[in-house]
Length: 432
Ligand SMILES: C[S@@+](CC[C@H](N)C(=O)[O-])C[C@H]1O[C@@H](n2cnc3c(N)ncnc32)[C@H](O)[C@@H]1O
Image (tube, rainbow, N blue to C red):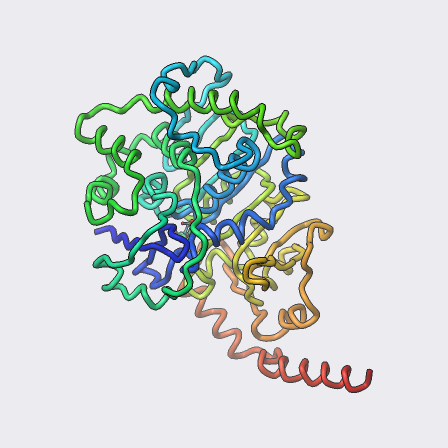
């Protein structure tokens, strides 16, 4: 039976625990906060929005925080000047929405396990995960809870508490509900098996999980399951988006006004691809402006951190594109470097430290270069990368092969390197 272990992270967003990987999906500091800090804030939005189209690849979509945060950022910062409570419009306003303002067809096509939306792509987000159930659950996940308590059975049983520091609650984060509706709408359009997936139905109907789900989307889903017809959300949402666009275009931030001439909210395309990311990307011909890499830690899921995988990503990144990831490991950074990337740090202003890595083709895009120490680290045994020659290896085998290589290497150990480096620094300081 499919296992689902949700809990609230310290910013009020829902996090998950995986018993298969014995790992958490999200930072316990805050699933949503992490998505914003690692994947959205480091982006140079001004430059990005000058482009005619933006393509984002979200590797390891899970319940979608990175895609949702990106869409939410675009939506809030560009289409809304402030966080207006636009979704609580009275019914009489909704009734006046005209759907014929939409100028293109959003209906998607279904092709095997690849769900795609064939609208023209101004802003397109392609999300990949090999867990279909999670992806299907993604639009139901609550967008942020102000008052939350982790007191459910799964939480205790799985000892997720070890990941949480209860005293470390941080500012409540939220994603506009419209983003969940948008993703729900797209998934219902392009995934014919969405309403017939038994695990999804079981989880959505289970009262135990209700507090983690958005009640109105859960309501629409349950209505369809019990009554057998789909609420006409599609027409509603299309109209609603056009309506929002018309209203908020006038209020859009001046800073983005020029850029906005390219974009309309209904130009957003969301593709969902279910499968092993290596295979899906091999079969994909797109070049991306942004790639979010959010796999489980390298020791648990090395197949998505290998040198060969980064070579594959190199082939799929635009010349001025950027890969963003939370990992700062030397093995990952050296794999990126070997694959041809320039690498830099992601700086977290809240924590005032480096908390991730960017990989780019154009070194001018790096704002926080690696230090001399970090660059040296890549040459030590810690910098030996994972190998997955045909991009088909199993995680255990990939992990074991690297472990063996580290044990047999002539490279300097990390601890010795640190000692030498500190000694060198000491000499430099005493001489100056
Ligand atoms: C750390 S979680 C990602 C969390 C996600 N970004 C979110 O916002 O919920 C890692 C994800 O990788 C997926 N995954 C694991 N191995 C994969 C593979 N080989 N290809 C694609 N997805 C994979 C898991 O199903 C899981 O959802």
